[in-house]
Image (cartoon, rainbow, N blue to C red):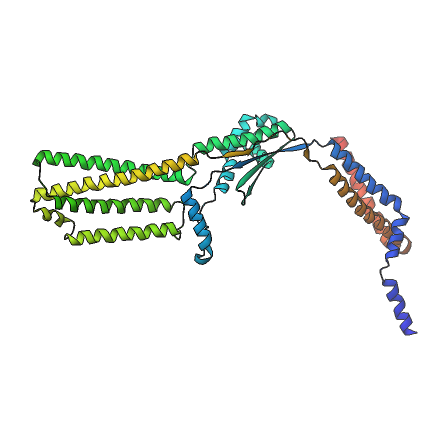
Length: 409
């Protein structure tokens, strides 16, 4: 008997799915009414909402030069071994995406389409934020293609803005040294200018010295030694410039940088061997058995030869960088130009109505169970029901006060 008495309350406490289904079926009108009501309201809202269109354009950013591509391939192969994975190299696509979202480009778009008035904005900062919300830029690593999307209520404006972004990116790109070749060209240009000034100065000093002392005769052996040492020093200086340029776009672990460093060490060893063979820098002049005036003449000739050889070496690298820059100057290529879209992307009416139906159904279930719980409390627990009534009166009292306050205003 005791076991039966224990089992009975346990059976009562069990959740019976049929009881819940009966409650829902009993109040099916409420469930259907709320569900269909939310669906109808959502459908009306979706019809009232203005359509939004998306225009799309695809561009191909400038590709790396052949030297840079080989470095990328080598770094990708050695990345696991040396622990860098090519992380020290700049990704051009990220740079161009950043330029698209930069303030100069955004301001030009705002001015071009008079977006301050169109979007009813008082400040440029607010207009920029609005434009950025309409702009979506994606980069495909496999194809290296940048896709640019612009959303707007006007399909023609969306297409025009997408194309304008590309045009403004091109205009900004022309005024900036963004490519590796352009950086090399600018660097060599500065070095070439300094070397040219040093060459002109050394030639002027040589000319002045000759005018004061007259012509000094030097044998072929001394002239050959001076030329060899000057050439070695010029090659070292040119190699140092090349390494500094490479380090602007590569990591120190880059195989090309390491190879250039090894070549520099080899040139320095060659120079040391030449100088030691002839007893140091100052003893070069003793080879020709010249006087103190001859020593000064040798030094000035050495400076002229050094600057002349260095200038020619830098000039070759400068011309090579200019050629690479000219190839890169074809820059951004448009794969697909944006056209006015025919289909809207928002609002998605079908999805909105489906979501509203599911949401309305679950809300109606909650309402049905709350009503059922309230009626059960009214039957079985009058004290709790009194609390419900008190809460209702308090809420209604607050509502009346609000209404009176509004009427006074």
